[in-house]
Image (cartoon, rainbow, N blue to C red; front, side):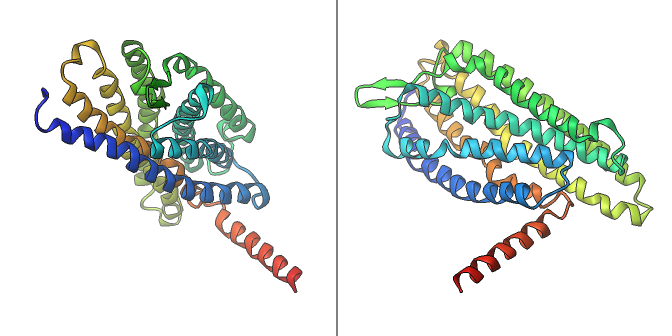
Length: 318
């Protein structure tokens, strides 16, 4: 696609998406996500007494989401104003936290799926993978692994200094495109595809297990909730994460030297890539739903705690 009459339209679309779409979408994610995850953290800390493996994974997932959501106000202001005023260090750390949330979320969702399968096969939690100590070790390992995995991204994020201001460009739009593409493909394979295959494998195992137990109604019905949870995790992977990883790699590839003359194509690719970016992090607002699918009476305990808090506040006012 060479430069033609459609290219000015793509340039306008790119500018509108970055200024309005990103700032509005991230704004909605911030409000809904902070509210949902704060309620969940409150519930886990003050309502849930007997923590299981899945609770430990979900609590870490919520902490990861809150860390990401705290970076959004700076991004929202940056996109709406078209300038980055917070300095290079905050730009790099902002992008780092954003990717850390993405890949810790993927791994925690993967281990939640594994835990749901083990819960069906070992309902009395006698397997060593169902021990709380193991879940704590796995959670620590996930944080350490993702931290080390993302270290190479730091030199690849370069704030863009222009005549009319400084811009904190996203990872796919900054740094050397050749090195960025190699690293992006590595992240796609290790951080996304492998966990996706693991999750699909356990989805298949759960479905197979339920099929074998389908004649035993008393046993089969309670086991449908773990399947629902794993299906939801697979859907999040497929709908939210897949387009982002595909378009991120395509966006970086379009910045290579051989694409220089195809400016219109590059602008169009970047426009599609912009659309996928907030969608990939929409999971931060959806993840709290998992807490109400765990079957550990979390919702009942949370509502009871909130009612008691409300009663105590009203009694104090009287």
